[in-house]
Amino acid sequence: MKTLAGDMNSLQCPIPLDDYPQVVMAHGGGGKLTHQLIADMFQPLFANDILQNEHDGADLILPGKHIAFTTDSHVISPLFFPGGDIGKLAVYGTLNDLAMCGARPLYLSLSFILEEGLPMATLWKVAQSIRAAALEVGVKIVTGDTKVINRNQGNELFINTTGIGAIEHKLSIRPASIQPGDAIIINGDIGRHGMAIMATREGLEFETEITSDCAPLAGLVLELLKEEIPIHCMRDLTRGGLASALIEIALTAGKHITLSDESIPVLEQVKGACEILGLDPMHVANEGKFVIFVPRKAAERTLQIIKSQTLGKDACKIGEVTDGQPGMVVLENAFGGKRIVDMFSGEQLPRIC
Image (cartoon, rainbow, N blue to C red; front, side, top):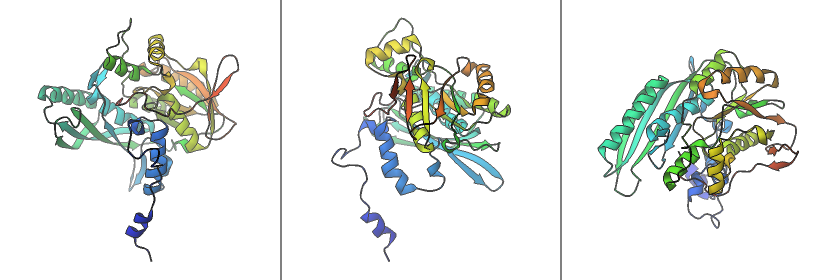
């Protein structure tokens, strides 16, 4: 009988080593290489019935409790940007993943990796931001860790957070639940976070400053649940933007998605910045936007509820789950033209969240 160690030693690395003998920045960018790394290396090694749901967090049944559990790491550069900072981003980003599972956020862990030489005033400012964000959303930071690394090895500050939330409904909110005919609704314009970061990094000045959409989504989602909207799936649009999020859902669910090009909201200054930098807003990260899949008959009511909330005033329907090749996302324009939406292959915006 083979030992476990023997079995593990006989496994071959599934990533083509001739193409990528080392990790590259694009492996963390939310595009094709990220998807390949997770699908070909991590998922087969760690496969189980919970992980196979491929959702923003784990849906766990404990004795007498139904919870969502998620973790996230934050390596953004710069640490402070128009509309937010790494502290606010760490809290909101993790709690938004819980919200996408339909959970009420309750607890956070907080771990710092600090570079030797980081100004204590910078750390204090970030810590204050974390405290304010946690109080705003109503979660408790209940455990954590701190490590320090040598100077010039960590670019100042990294944060890891883990979140736990309570699931208080009977819905199965996950990619596998979407159905043909489902409406796809977004709560507002795309691409602002990524462009705010890039403009800050590159010192770009526009007539109107581009501000990150960094925001907590739990309140909006809990309002939808309170109104008993039959939610099939939700996903926040972070790394890889709207395109990667929808492609991942289509692949996991084995469904075809059709989008309306003219329905996808993008601010003019974001469009302009993307044109200057040669980027597609569909692939640019957001930190306060999400898509929700609901049955067609519930779409109008869902839109009304989302639009009544500050973070959803510009919500609109952008597409549907349709008959067609499973795992594919297609974008239709006003003239009847169609193009397949794909994940980007390289790294558009490194260190974006």
